[in-house]
Length: 177
Image 1 (cartoon, rainbow, N blue to C red):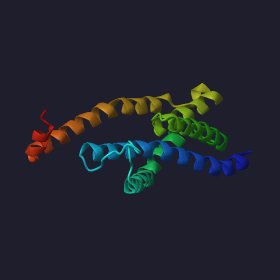
Image 2: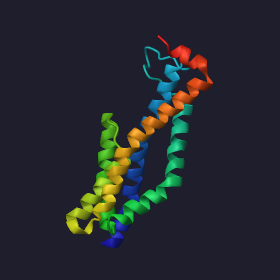
Image 3: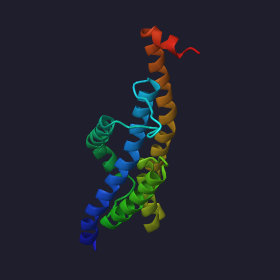
Image 4: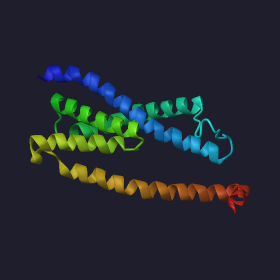
């Protein structure tokens, strides 16, 4: 059975990669396009209320690919071995469940975190075999990181904005009502 599920994981990995790109790239493209519209570089038209230039699509795909290529292995190592020892059957089930949730959310227009979904699916697969097999301490560390990430990035963005306002004072004047 292991060889069957190992071969099947090629198909499920492709599905998970497709869903990851479909969901995460949409968020990236939306932020870039929103910035272009807000800065006046891009003008919405009545026919296409939110136009996304082709170069934004290509840039987003390249950024997602580069991020996965450079940081993906560390994430895979954590998810694939630190929660519990994943066998091919667990990997197959986890990938099918994750790809279904992520792609479903993307098709309905709901942004979800690929990492959150995959982590939850892996913990669920491990728990279904034996609850004590999952290293819950690793899960707690990941959840704590998720909780800290949003306020930390908000603070960083505020600091960058304040620095830009100091360097480019006309940007602050343009923001005034």
